[in-house]
Length: 310
Length: 295
Image (tube, rainbow over all chains, first blue to last red; front, side, top):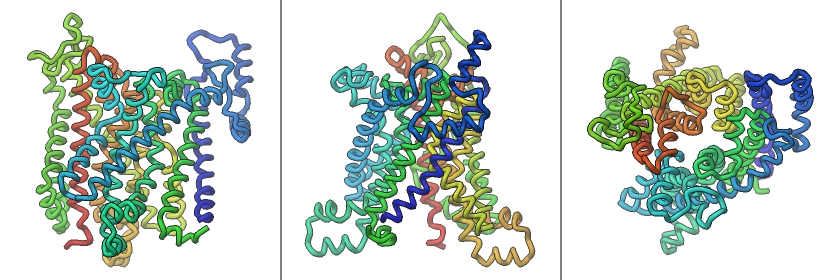
């Protein structure tokens, strides 16, 4: 097991380095410098600014300096918010985004997992078709459409829930979490249904039934663990999707999170902010992928045997 | 319908009954057929939009403003008095074009990459697929946002950027296919006949790997269209005066309280198309998956 973990950790390092390098040079070759605004900047001021942001150094040196900053956990100053560092901006946005992501993941796993397992218990019956059709709608309905529609129905017409904000009013976290989690609930429903169906036809399930266990125990004690491995493996990629989805959801519901900062930075062409956020989010995604791979491997007895128990 | 019929005709010449089989199975799958019909309908409309659209693309009626659906404007008008049906038709052209063109880019890169890696094998294969693995781990949504910011928001770049990130799975599928096909006698026969590797890949390997590639292509188009709509919604994709379904949805979301039809109709167009593509793709997969077990 530790060999597997170690191997995957080693694989993650070149990926993160690649992200940093590609992002850094992409941002640097962007047409138009950050200080090319409509009004002309006095040359001395521009030079001073460039020196402050190290833009006067050769590109190679800038890159190395950036790497050494990163190694110390420094993401650099923001171009657009003078006096604030990218670290501060990320720290300001992270809590809301993390909370939103956690709730959405909870919605996805609970709703999707339950629906999928429920559907798999009676394949090709109404109990299967109805949740799976709803799941198909969930997959086809984009987040940026579902969000406004939910707001329209529950916020504006029924007036049950607040239409925007985060933590300002009771219940204002429900719609964003549902919006973000819905598509993943749908995927997880499909995955867990397929996984459960495969597991339920295996010999060890027949054994469990033969020794007279009640069906609910067969499902909860024996089938779930194997049937949900695909779901756990999916959580890594889902995390990346959730982050991207949070850009949209935070924009729709006006949540002061990282996603909204990122989109704003994109519009303001705040290059250091874009660079820093990209590196930060990418590293998070890579680490989460790693975690979900390790978890899936740990749940899978065959893979565990292959690498030996730790 | 024409695309399937065409590929069926092309492949029938090569003497395989697989495609007739698949078509027979597909015909029984009502959802998939429904998807195909919706798709053909939307594609035809998109092609014929300049002749079919009830109003000019930029025709405004500022006095009318935003009006609900009526006899003159079947789906209503937006705040500038522009006919929503016309907007949706022109938007569909762009959304569908992005879906098809970007998928084609992904198809060409992925199939070539996978075929070369699978056919050459050895060290070349290891290096090429390792690169795919690394790219796979990159967070693409974020990278596409970055690309659109850095290089400005033009449509051609959007095609390329989306195409360039969607080819990875295609390469993996193609490599797997080529690796298993390479062991077979007809490839050995082709080698002993002295055909060049390029010819063998083009004439013998690619046609035989077509099934999974077609299925995956059908399933890539909706995810590409979703990506385009996502970017356009954020304002990073298609730029006005051009329009797309994502852009229309984003305008609709801004004014949904007063004019809900501006959100609902473009949303329905996009969702229906994605539905159709997914159902058709799933049906195609079921119809073609028998390869190996049947026959």
